[in-house]
Image (cartoon, rainbow, N blue to C red):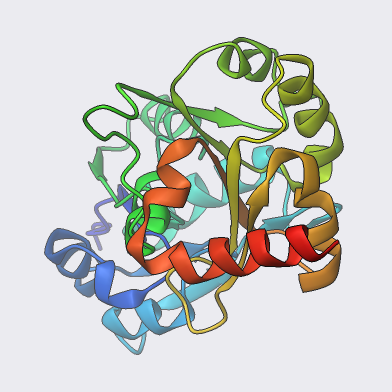
Length: 258
């Protein structure tokens, strides 16, 4: 009997966390999945779009806690595609924004497996927007940087040093463990009074927010018990958000009392 299995890999961006921000194209891809390999940042509710009989495998990563190494994930993608057919690799945000999606696609293609990519709404843009933070705004910010806080060798990205010297809005992903270093870099550029927002679990029901200035953000983080996964947004646009005005004014009032 001939083997009728047709291997295929579709890399799907799961968006920033709110399942309603999943794209229609992502829903259609999931509906045809034989296997779903999903990340820690992909909302579990999204798995309901895959067939009930499909195989679902958690391959998420957290700091110091990886279900699988990247090499193991690459091999799982290939093995499941060759064994079962259509594999949907579900990744948080957009798979090409610090998601190592290109590596996974390249590995699958090296075995001759057809691949496709469904872009996702990046948390770098959607999480600030959900709180009314416009990363660019006429007269305030002409551009924005999106930077990883932690590089593959676990160091702080050198690009943050350059970003701190600019007038652009700075968005830092995976930067909570390096917050003290980030604060120091901006203080060296005399930007201690620059507004900053830290948004944990953005766009979800578990969202937590801390808003202050560079000089005092570490105290706010400690007070509000903020941790990863979180997005750091630095720039004057933070205090211009209507949704965050209450947070910012409350912080300024508390600072005056001190």
